[in-house]
Image (tube, rainbow, N blue to C red):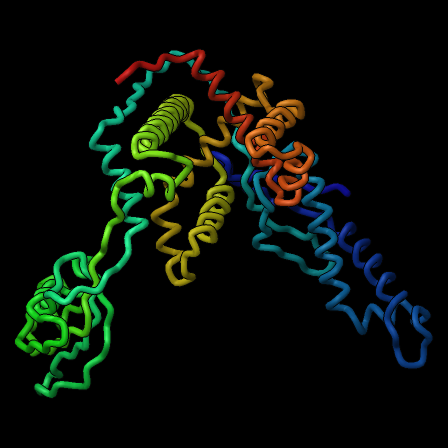
Length: 414
């Protein structure tokens, strides 16, 4: 099929082509579609597949025309891709399709191509590596967080304090001064679950006591009609529970992990924090380095790829449908940067032959199996079943690419 291709726009990765298909090619496609219909339709007075093509064509003219146009557009699209040697980033869109019997069929193809990334500068960069020291205060804070996780809520018979969990019967007067029936609430004081004025009122009462007085709503209250308004508020404090932290002793150490003493727990926390800080520092170095590579080698990325990434994160974070638009707008710059990062890694992996091999993947699986004390075949089967083998390959490829980059650039201590 001879078609005419006329570029109408070429900006970055955006492409628009005007395509014209000769009238005789369209006519031939219609004839073919009519014959296809004639073999499968049933018409009164004729056995299936025996109705004359002219009769079939007259009765199913519109359906035959649409099928012929779809076939022509698909064939033309394949020829455009072949003739123009295009590397598409996503499925193209057909716009402004025009066709009248006996004339050429014309339409515009709108699409994005894969970026042509050269990466002329990937060496000579300098990044600063900052790794926080593991202080005794930081270790203590982490152990306190472990104690918080094991804390229990214990009833107390005194007035509530910030941090206590309280159960209250609460009511606020209506606009006409009527005090409605109280409702029960469970509130952790200081957790932002109630406005400060109500928390102050709660802390004035002893368990079993009812207190009542005007409470002023904050000037920055989300409901503007309630900002700065004072309302008569009644609170009955039903019970108070206070968080009781476990004693920091050897029994606690054994409870939270494989530690036989507080000293062993402290050492374990210190080692874990040190490893965590090291991983964070390494990740920050990689992020800084790839940012410099992106800035030194600017290129456009297909919007389709950015949208795909945004949609993926939207599903992962379970963003409500009504908030997807705002989420996409706010997340777009970060998503575009992530796509650029991935393209650079893919480009270097291909150019420098750094893509993880099967033997690399096998070695990683053996490492995972050894850490879990299981058979490598079992780990491989689990990863394969969960569709995670490509993820392992990607992680190993990224590791090799960043090792290659770090060998050619400077990292200084901050």
